[in-house]
Figure (spheres, one colour):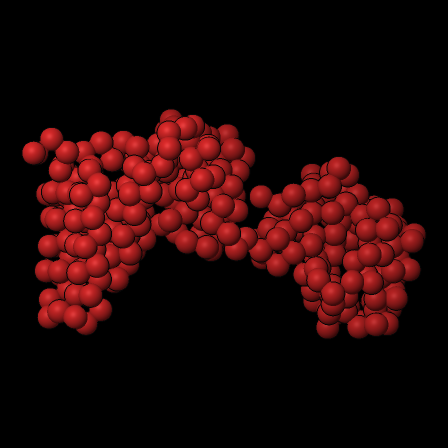
Length: 329
């Protein structure tokens, strides 16, 4: 979610939305417009690009009206404004008009920094809209979406949704909205899987999860479904490799709390709990066998064999057997 400053008055004279995440920038605008129209249903909204805001335009838009109407003036890509227009905006920041809210959308960075600094110095309400490049940021975003909707979702469900959808925040927000609308009660991993298991990443990890749990028949069924729906074999070998390596990492780690192990192994705490459940039948020899099987499958799907599907099936069976190596003697 976008982060806001302490001045959280949506009808503050100036709102500064800073960043490059389009969804968050659009939301910052919508929030201000909604608040203005809640105060006055006839609020006039002007949404302008730099080429539409010429010198003198802002003064014209913000000049007193006979009817004292409320107005929201949105300026997009403020870092691209001409030097003369920037002078106009800076002058306005020193004496903003009543009943008018100016919303400046700025990418941040060095370009147009003078305007950015001037808006901050003038006490603008600021909304941070950073590009979410890290998986952890997108996971936090999904959790925030569920909280905002007043719904509960398990950590596993949030992670599977991020794995399934990817990096597009609009798609993630849309997926959360769909789940909230369709599902009653707590949203868990199984529900997310039903909706989004057709995504390449999600279906690949389903194959891997069933394999490392020793559930060969279910893993093979998931594998065949994934391949039939067009999932690239290389994505499946990658998921298998991640699943087996996680077993190996955790089995060789010292005991401790999930949070401590998460820091040590570079895994989220929820994954520590999941892998602990999956590793019950594994032995060190079993991990070695499974890693060799993954390596052979990887070579098979990258041109080293004639039948990538058979190479994957063989690897899945080998991994599932390795998962049950403890106690076989």
